[in-house]
Amino acid sequence: MLFNRGLPSRFARNVEYFLIGRHFGFIPYFFPGVVAIVLWLASGARRDSWRILTFAAFSGSVILLLLLLPYTWSGGGGPPGNRYLFNSYPTLFFLLPPMVASWHGVLAFVGGALFTAKMVADPFVAAKFTWLMTEKGPARRLPVELTMAQDLPVMLAQPLRGRVQYRYDPGLLLYFLDQNAWPPEPEGMWTSGAGRADIIVRSAEPIDHLSMEAESPIGTVLTVRLGGRPVTVILSPGSRLTFDVPASGIRGRAGFVYLLTTWSSEGFIPHLRDPQSGDYRNLGAQLRFRPVIASSGTP
Image (cartoon, rainbow, N blue to C red; front, side, top):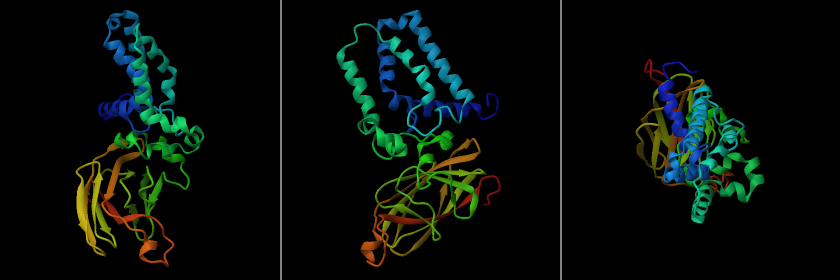
């Protein structure tokens, strides 16, 4: 793991995920530690040799963690935050300079509460349904840790939302990070009309682009992105549209990983259109896609 061609780019990406990752990020889930570092750097105590050594030891442990465990550095198991970081995290509070004002503590509390208040307010639900904590709120704006697809909280969800095979392609696995899309059905995969859907796509081969087909019984504007340039199309009621979505992803532990994002401007509930239907979902558009492999240009 330490010495290979992909090390620099993988390490740089993991540094980003470590700092601001949606599920395991240091800044969102260990915000008091961030405040401690900032206060230390802004004070005269930043020249204290023992504080410098303390911070160097903490940083060194993080670097080793990202190098030695590039695909499991959060500790696994599904909970938000970083289990492995708890061993060294307390050392950051030794960085705090003397005479810290009370509002600094308020700042640490408020900043941390933006991402952890739901867990603290209802810890039993947060412990049992860990994947719900990042489906809404500020965390949705943070990048998804693609290198850690196998360790994301959604892997614990039931019914199954992780490692879902896409139709008849065993080399294409889907991870549904929220409830704005549903596992593939015989006719295709439905996305919601209620909000953005984030789906990790894992492929055994590198993908150049997706050849996608979309349709909806209502008029809607559909935006699709696979890590690269977003593609926006206008769907007319009952029409079927074919288009290509360029791909940009990373090399993961077992294949290549991409983040598929979809957004439908409008939605409908099948039961309201047809009372005989037992489908009460808020649906936007139905998708079918075929990966075009980068190496040969064929799926």
